[in-house]
Length: 249
Ligand code: NDP
View 1: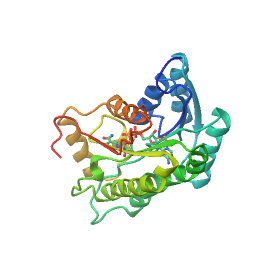
View 2: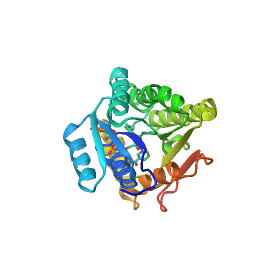
View 3: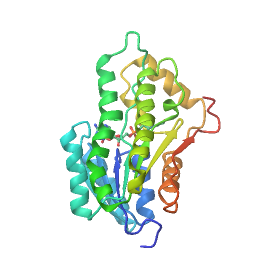
């Protein structure tokens, strides 16, 4: 297979649906071997079969990345079975909306466990490999919510603000090892992400907001990620903020 990513291995978390699934397909179409991770094995296998049917190579790895051991095993398995790791797309995330006042504190823990700690566990496990080979690219999926706070979105805002902060700190820590760090900040994207919201009022509000405009498609974000990871080695795309044209803030 010809393509800009031939010879590269990418790990994509949260690849069983939405942006992660589209990113796995886009990177594989450019020749990357992709290790695709999530908890739902049936969906992961379906994504892997689709990639393989198009001539690509995909390795499904079932992992709950909020568990540090599973996150570490994911990276080790990808490296052992695909031979190296070049790109890590830290995409798995949840957007549990709701006000802070009266909020469900178990939602808060789930949010930070996945959006911040899960991302860090995978990154922590991958960095020694990238440093040893003196190259690599970490792509962290943040959000417009990492730049603009809204009432009723505070916890999600805090997790994605955290992703932006740790990403910039990491960029400064590892650029001398020739490791690139990119933050992707999507606006509203048409995915399953609202399904997990436990607060019915918050769920209705975001669904109405999403329906009031033409949202982005997962493929739009995959294209932005593909752009970042296919630039010449001298280029580090630090941040991409991408909203639907109709999204005001
Ligand atoms: P989806 O719900 O479609 O995808 C989320 C993915 O994360 C799924 O593959 C899910 O798989 C995986 N996941 C959830 N929990 C875990 C876990 N504990 N361990 C491993 N994987 C897990 O949503 P999106 O595609 O929309 O979201 C992807 C990213 O994009 C998130 O970081 C989100 O914050 C961000 N984003 C989304 C926006 C939107 O409007 N949709 C806007 C801005 C940012 P499984 O359940 O099988 O584990």
